[in-house]
Every structure is written in structure tokens, then in C-alpha cells.
Image 1 (cartoon, rainbow, N blue to C red):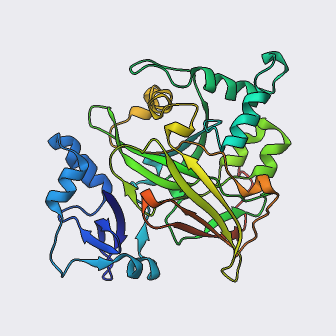
Image 2: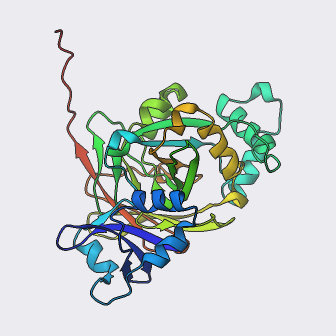
Length: 333
């Protein structure tokens, strides 16, 4: 099942089941968070609850394309208080294409002391990122991106701060979570994501990773309910201002193409009590092995990122915009 969040022409928030171009509203629930919290409270699956509450009348049904064209799409999950939505991620988790995979294995195959810190981390994941069920494997690289205020729905612009040295896409799968009243993390589902980063800043020194990640991100448009397929195929594109594709590359995800299990990545995020606060929402990116920056592409303001995978329905599209720095020196009181 695919779910989207959107607003009606009258401005009312809705959750809808997406089937092709048809969007059927889920009656009684204005947000994915409300729907998820009801499923938790009732002890039922999200898909079953959404299906039971769907309004099949013609009056409520809408066209996805009409919603998207009108700019009424919302991110597939959010929180009414953006500070209660954590956006985080993990890196060095994907094995990439067969050629990339072979090159990486050759690179990490020698004496561990000769490897860079990044290659050591990648090797640790390859050797210990897929533990037996119920066990904890090696920790992945982890980073903080921001709170819910940085999340952009499909169609919304990704703002690149004017102090940035680069603004490049990272096509990824994100896990979407709600923390239950008892502190139990509950996975709502998965969505396409653009974990937008400043790769030039990061390349100067890996200790700048934290700076490079404090950026907008794109999520959606649809939420895939249920388990993530073991093999996910997609395409990442950069479209110029004229709409023409100027860069395109396939990407893969899913555990078959990863050095970590989803469960291991989740364990090492939610093991921290800070991330078990009842009512909070989490958007957690699982990493990628494909990005235009690696092909020396520099994306300019006015161009559009496009990330698409058949399992996730419509493409995630976000134009790039340049944002002035809202900076004021600290005032002494």
C-alpha cells in the first residue's frame, strides 16, 4: 500500500491511499501521524486500518496529478511541532553496483591500518553489519540533519544556503517512524528521499561531515507501508532549467545491496533513550552509493532533482533554490 499526505482544494489536510493516479481519502484521519497513533493504540496494522477507513465514494477521490500540479502535496509524515521530528541518517551502508562493489572490496582487502577512516568504517559494515536476527551488529556512521522544518515535499524547492560550496542530491530510502506512548519505536513505512548534502565541504575534511548534512531534504511523495523489498531499483536525474535531463544514473537499495540490515541500522539509532520519546516522529535515511557529484556534476539553482523507483509510485521532484543566510551576531543581554 502507498499512502500520501495532501491538502484538498479547500485547504483541509488528508491522508490518502494512492493507486495509480487515484487518491482515496482515509476518513477520520487528517495526518499520517494520527493514523499511525490510532494503529498503535488499537494494536492493528497501518494498512488494515487505512483500508478500513478509506472513503470509496466518488466525492472524496482525487487525481494524484491534479494534487501535485496544484502544489498540494505534503511530506508523507510530519509532526505539528517540527521540533518533535528528528531527521537523521547513516552512511557507508551501500555496496553499489557490481563494478563499484568489486572496487570497494579490493580497496578494503589489505591491511586495515593502511585504510582511511571511511574505508575502515565501510569494511566494518561489510564484516559485521548483518548480524543474526535478534543480535546487534557493528555501528554504522551516523549523522543528524535537522528537525521537521528542513523536510521538503515533492514539488517544493530545496534551499541551498548561500554559504554552501555545493548542493548535491543523494537518492536514498528513508525509514519513517512514530514513537508509541510507551516509548516503543514503530516503523510506519518507507519513502524515497533526497538526502541533500554539501559534498565539497565534506570532501575538505571528513570532520566537516556534520556541517555538510545540515541542509534541507526531500521526502516522498508516497509512503510504502510494510517491509522494504530486498532489492530496490531506481533512477536519479538532474533536469536543467529547460526540463531536459542532463545527468541520469540508476541506483539500487534494499538489504541485498547493503552492508547493513535495516534492523541493525534501526537498533543503533533507537538504542539511545533520547530517540524513544513518546509521540515523536523520526525520518531516518539509510544511505546511498550513487550521486551526481561523483561524476563532477554541479547542480545550479533552478535545476531540478528527480528520484524515481517503481515500488514507491510517483517520482520525488525538488527544484534547487539559493537561500540567503539568516544570520545575526549573538546579542548580549
